Length: 299
Image 1 (cartoon, helix red, strand yellow):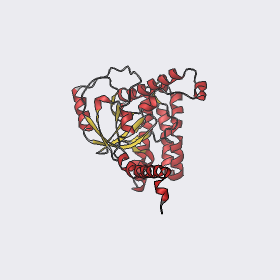
Image 2 (cartoon, rainbow, N blue to C red):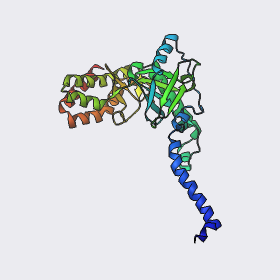
Image 3 (tube, rainbow, N blue to C red):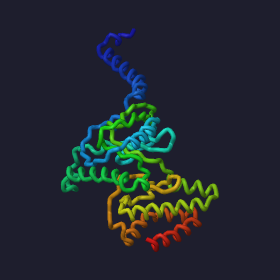
């Protein structure tokens, strides 16, 4: 009746069908427990050299240990780092994306656009790490940076317990990876929306003051944030008592920022915030304009 059952082609087709079904049924369950590519990349091969001699004393190490010992949950990623949020919601830790920094074969168009591709990539790496160092050494209050570790010293700081977006858990020795530890900030627009919903106009105005104060303090310290999309990229946030830069990857030391014309130009990066206030909170937009004039006159 079923003569095709003893045909070689049927046996081969049946075997492939079983294999395919098994793959579909078994693969998802094993993938859920497979090591995350994020964890693999965090431990990626270091392809750069950082000339930084900072060392942490015993008091600093003790504080870091207390922060690091809690679980950290996957929070997102930027262009250079993976971000994890602490269990208590007070800190974020950023781990270097090694795959973004590792040398790769460039396309013909990329090679034509760059005079020296390898040199330019190395320059960008150095700019990135210099920016992290500036955030810690020059303006820690303006970035909320608690620590920057680029394997500049062999020191026991504890074990990170990292949980990825699928719930996979990985133990990472802090001394074996590069990371930036920051206080977690509240984004500007949601914070202002919250305060205005609570009819706390005075607190919302103080938040606007803090945004201006951030740019003033950094300019006077000779530090420039080169992110042209400051507001659009959500690169400003609030701690309890001040505003900070959230992305610490575009900071440069620049004495020209201490000059009023350059500072005035820098303030233009806040234009999207001004427009947003005009559209939704005219009262705050009027206050913004007043404070801007005061800030410029007093600089």
